[in-house]
Image (cartoon, helix red, strand yellow):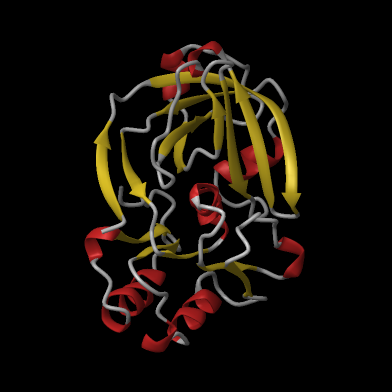
Length: 258
């Protein structure tokens, strides 16, 4: 086996941080930078890690008091990048208009606004080099997909499928030449509809070669189609593949399985 997935428990740490930068990567996707002394020593071992970010109400006075920050509404996010020595953490957010908590906050919070950051509680760590890769998700999975892509060797082979509204929402994944990146446009359809159709279109003959690492994450409805592809048609080992719903339509408090 050229690779393994291993769980690594972590001590749960709560940190406070302030927003210092906002960069729009597409019309509905922003990268935010947070800084603070509490972020020194932060680490995330798994590309699919989850942290919990605690947001204060719009217009709330900035504070680094942990007790106050813990009282805010929280949502799960995948750490994108960080500098443990400098106390910097970058997170990426999908913004769907004025709906939800995290998106509107990410789009409008003034620089200097503060958040609480808890975790990650544990990591599922990919060790080794798969013979080939298969990654698929919607915008919410892009931070994890980008991190997996950054792990790939220069001679890596495989495919990446990402569902977005249309071409204006595509991003540069900077994947190796042997990785085929396909942007799936859903238009006005519900999230995961187009991605699910793309997965359904793949047969056993489309299976990547050798020992495959597969990661599929999007709206909860993708789980059935993802499992059917990976475990029924491609006969991959569920112990070395990840299929999960990152969010669930109509359930604001849905937690992605770790």
